[in-house]
Image (cartoon, rainbow, N blue to C red; front, side, top):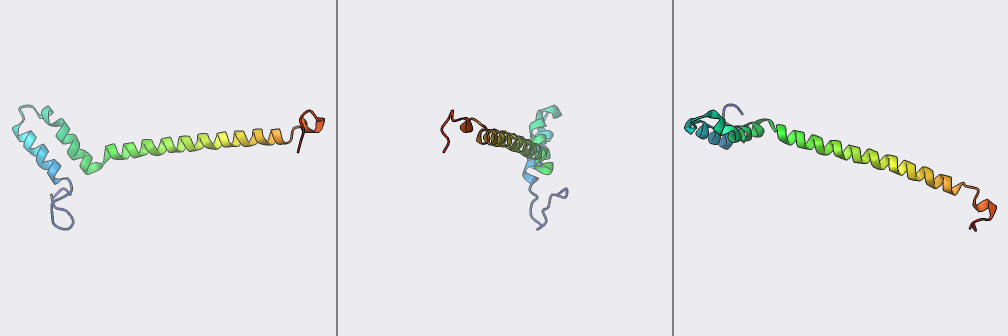
Length: 96
């Protein structure tokens, strides 16, 4: 939370990241020296990298599921064609 306190009155979940960033910023000659601490703090607040990663994983899972679905449909169609072919009726291959 922005106040630095959590819902139960203790420290917020990102307070330690804020302290690291604040300490770095206070002692830095150039603010760009603290970009990694700032990124850690902002990630703790907003979870942007985590959300992006989960979105990529979910997208890949959906792609793979769609690919499996099309492959299964293709295999099923080929099996149906092979099962209904006239090759066994011509006595070229012995049918059971």
